Structures are given as C-alpha cells and as structure tokens.
Amino acid sequence: MAPETLLKATVLMAYSIRARSANASTTLFKWFLDMPIDAKAFDATTFTKNRSRLLEHEVADRFFAEVVPQAKLRRYVSSEHFSVDGTLLEAWASQQVGAAAR
Image (tube, rainbow, N blue to C red; front, top):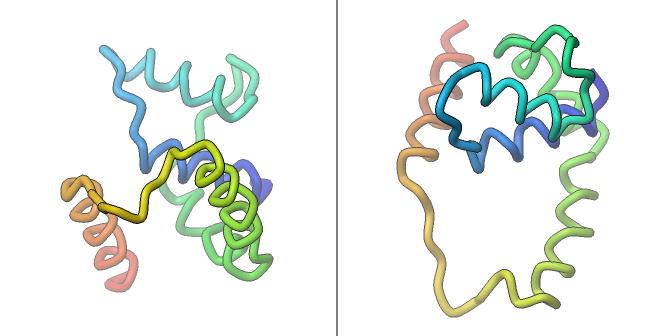
C-alpha cells in the first residue's frame, strides 16, 4: 500500500466516518481513498504491516507540516482550547497494546 493511501486511511479512521451500514462505510472509505468501487478492501493487518513505512519516510510529518499551517490560516484550529474524543484515544491505545503483545 502506498504511504499516502495509508496516511489517508489513518486520518479517515481517526475521524471515523459514521454510516448506517458497514457496506456504506466501505463505499465511503473507498471513495475517500480513490479506490475503485470493486477493489478488495484491506484489513487491519495492512496497517500494522505498513505503519512503519509512514514513520520511516516521514510521510505523516510532511503531511502535517503542510496541513497545519493551512488549518491555522483558515482558523480551523485554535490555541485557546484543545479537545479530544476519549473513545478514539482508547481505541488507539488498545491497538498499540495489542500490537505490542504480538
């Protein structure tokens, strides 16, 4: 999987597009990732096998180096407050614990 696609998929999962059915979620996921509608969906092991590539090639660093200044310019971010969806943190933490146990 291309590092750019992996990064987009990670961002999508972080913001978790909510759909009424798993089929609709898969369709939205493929659309966001520019995948053909009939392409085989990848599973969670795709992320665990390829995540190191994002870090090695600094794709995420370059992505956020471009995105954050644009978000600040458009006032999408604020230094006045910070909020986090705790359920996303819990889900990420449980993935990290599970990956470390393997």
